[in-house]
Length: 432
Image (tube, rainbow, N blue to C red; front, side):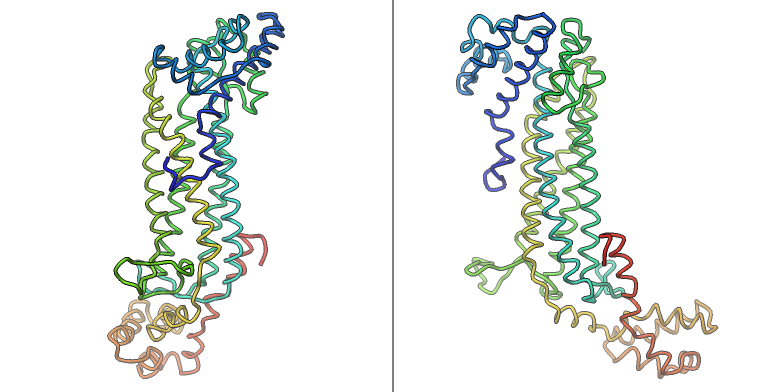
């Protein structure tokens, strides 16, 4: 996490203060549950809530000696609570605290990410309807193909992020489990009802079976989901970067007054935000493989996963939060140039209608192979810059004998390519 790519609300989730606060709540709620079972005095549970305090700097100081973060934390809390602190952590193990805390933090992070996606979805929906009927050049392999609309591009992105939202909701549910099961997860020294109580207090569900640690397939799924979302961010960013290229220039990132594009060339207006998003997406995806490799631990536990999660937990969520917010801002302020859109649409002199002519010739009786040859030989003349596609077709007797002039004219109709836009919008947004 570096300040340049961090937002305070998400960063705060990973602060020492928030982490130790969650640790304290886990321990204190567990004491309450054990007090109800008669395992610890109710006065001790009350004292822990009333006197329990912690100091991150003091915890760090103690850890220098103990070489154990949870023991350092418990020692610091005990310094404030006094004798009754001996009832803390009864029958628990460090992973009960660490894994349950991580579940809370990832759930908190998920809620921020879901809000980020909601903002992005709203921006994409607005832009989709703004440009629903603005016909533009569709491209395959980067080459002019057939017409689409700018609105359809945004609708496609919206549908993808709606799927991502559902994926993240499922991943949040999967990750939000609580383990208070003691050493090797057998509940030998702690009653399962304690876990159920703590889980309810923290908004989690009890882990059905833990092996001293919560199974890491849950975490693997969570970070893989973040990786998919990052890839979707890069897909949108890449499209904008291509549309902003000088040769295309159908859309570009908002360029604010006083903004500079290049230290050397004053004319430059570069897609710096979407290029940045491409890089950030790579970082988030790079954290997926370590999460997958964390699934296989030795026997009931080891800590090979711990160092990984201490880094990818904060870094992946903070980076993705920043990226989603940045992308939403890009979409909200994106500048679209209808004149350039029209210019590119007309650039190849009607070649975008080649498939429709091909199909019409087959309907008129020509074999598909012969029709392809007839259409292609005229298209290649236009590609070489010799003239207009429709004029060439009309002059080609093999074509015009089957498709007289008016019939050919009717095939060059942009509306033919946009007649189902409303159908697609209805599928994506439930309205047109």
